Length: 324
Image (cartoon, rainbow, N blue to C red):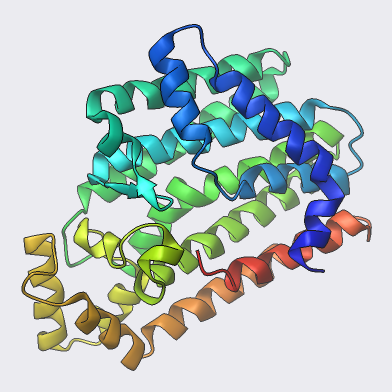
């Protein structure tokens, strides 16, 4: 199944999500409306809404609340991106100026806060405290992940286990929430809810590990941000962690230099890219991402063999092959 086939399964609902997002970004407060328009015009992959819609469809849901909650998850995700760009001092997002570069940190932080609270306000209209609790728990775990990452920022000794725990909280838990809520809406029961939650978690882990690799293998035009951004921001991701585990002092010195400088003025980014390519740490990272993808697929076994399930079985492969 190719991506266009997957989109065909939920196309009208995904369009409804897009309309819901745009509608809820509109405000009678001029500056919010202006910022929201800029934000909504920036595009996005909409992976998380797609995941929720497919999970709900696979599980037999026939209502309309999946559109609402898919929009809620997109709002939460967007809020994290807005805040992350401020924290990281990023200037480019999706190939254009980031919100903070275009509007300044103060307005951008407030917009992120607004998006978080707006997402909860939207969710409350469904009057489902069980799902509200899921959303609150996910948001807390994401913040915990960011705090863990900030605590270790610029440090050379981050272990693979530490990094995986950070991305489990910061990235993967939002994926798990999307698939879980799809099952909750369909009333699949605790066992299948757990399977869907695990599917999303493993998928999110694979997604972030591919992101770790793309920071070294893609280009700025395709990626929408400068190559090597993670290391420049002080983040030692899995390909570099694996490289440093090899114990070569020259490699370590180069990484430390970039972490200290927070730029590639003394060590060219191409040197770091060559190191992770030559020593197989990108492929090792890809192997782990592939294993997470396979674990995700295995979690779908309790569900009926329908088109939505086949789409969800295909998603890990699409994630592993993406270039942005």
